[in-house]
Length: 310
Length: 213
Image (tube, one colour):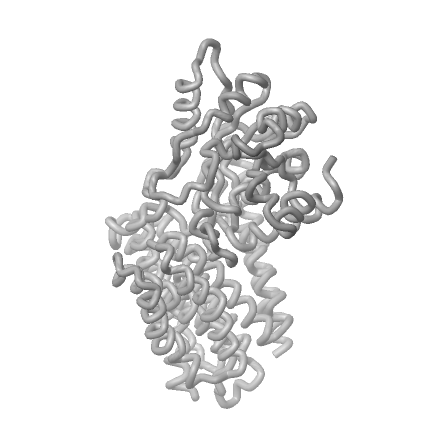
């Protein structure tokens, strides 16, 4: 694993260094003050350095580090999500439970590799316990709305995201001790697809996919981004137990799911009248702005790999 | 003037409140530039003044104290320790009948000692549905007595959902504090006109969508 990890790390640093170099040259040549696109690009690249550093540190600590990292991602994502929902005084215990019970328990179950429970803990037990708790508190005003918002919140922010670290627990024959690299593969292809869709959209974007939801998502960006992300995935096959063709296919699938994740997140933001989920990651917005594609891609990727390779 | 314990607890509270609320200041008016200020804010939670002081740069935080009700914070040893030793507070007695010290004198004393103040002009925590209660006259009296001090409206967003009255554990939600442009009492402006103008200046900083939505 060591050689491949080093290679992956060097590759990432090279990509980021190239991006910084290109953005630096562009910024130097551009008229001052910098146009907002370029300013945003610089902020985004800087944030990518920090994110890659954070993920690398988590990887150094192995499975525990990655589980903790994604528990934190869930916390930040859920906090952004709940901020935008309708909450009433009576929801306090449910909300506290989401942060203080659901997140720790879900990630603990992944840490001890109890697949049978972590795959149903949220959609069965939490989904029944949360409305029961809300009902006991007695406030029925907009009950269905509040309960649905809370459930969808832990589905997106906790359950789906937790399938990223869960990849490490998959017992794939011949892939022992390389679970972290599978996680790196998923993150690299999904986030790479986001970046590539952004680039293709900026360069060639004409026809909007869903103009009422997101003005920045175009067919040109989508097709170009997913095609190139599939090639990226195929090129990263050595991280995985897959053949290059399989890796490319899975990358394409993860990218399509990632696109839907971004689209759904945009629809929620538009409904609530905000542009970004938050401000945690400079240039990108909040944690959910960066993780929305991973939210949709992770569980589907997890289950396909689990079904076909274990 | 600020004890070491107050400095440490201020820094710890700032870290904690950032961890729970991710609070960030929006300087819609002007950032602190050394002049003494009275930050006046909407009030619905004990967390309010911690949030405002977290948003201030360390040097400004070190000289800023919150005006709080003595009747509440002197009731019981725990509260007295928190308000007196851990936090930087200026305690004023709200009860007209039993009070021993004039609140105005206490606050003016703090201002004359060079402190900036965090002040809640509604006089109490707002527990209702209305975004902002009627202002009591304290803010006007301070503005009239110390015209050099900048009055800065600060809208605290979401803290009442994080830590409502009677709650011990905060629910993590994102908060913001919007600092507006400094204002002052104008020549010939009477009490009602000034308080209305100050209240409108604070309300104007509230987000357009309803606070709960």
